[in-house]
Every structure is written in structure tokens, then in C-alpha cells.
Length: 117
Image 1 (cartoon, helix red, strand yellow):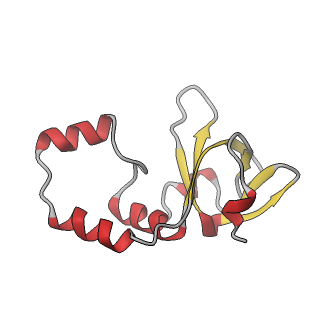
Image 2: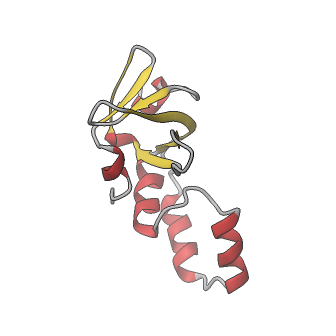
């Protein structure tokens, strides 16, 4: 049983410094077809309209390409971050160290999540 199987929507997420940084909004298992997706993305030349629509309504996860590849391969959780101006965050399955007492604990801090590749 993978760590993502023990996580549920709405569960608080605690970062590596011990702070609650938000709640689980979405759980996405590893994608067996990630290579096919990557090939399609790399081989297509999106037009400006598509790029604009994706940035506003876009596909998940809304992260740089290298990070998206990692998240697709490992599976991830989308975190609805706390705070009025806080943006959503994404944590790859391998950055979730444990699930205890109804909380998901990460091995990274909130800042480190945005730089995971």
C-alpha cells in the first residue's frame, strides 16, 4: 500500500518545519502513461491562445515542466495552502514522510516544495 492510499481529502498537511501549511485538496496517483504524456507535450507546439487558457484554467499541476514530470511519475497531493494570498502547492508522494493522527507530514518545508524537481 502506497503512502497516497492513506491520505484523504481535507486532511491537514504539515511541512518539514512542523507548520500546518494547508489541507489536501486532491490526491493524484502515479501515472503509468506519463512518458506518453511527456512525448505529446514536447512534440506539440502550443499556440498563444492555448498557453493563455492553460495558465488561467490550465491543466494540473500548475508547475514548471520538470516538476510536472516528477509529480506525474511519483503521484502527488495538491495542497490548498493557508492564508489569503497563499497559492496552492504540490507535494510528490516521495516527499510525504508519514501519515499520523489524521495529518500528512512532509519531509520538505513550504518553500522547498516550490523548488522540488
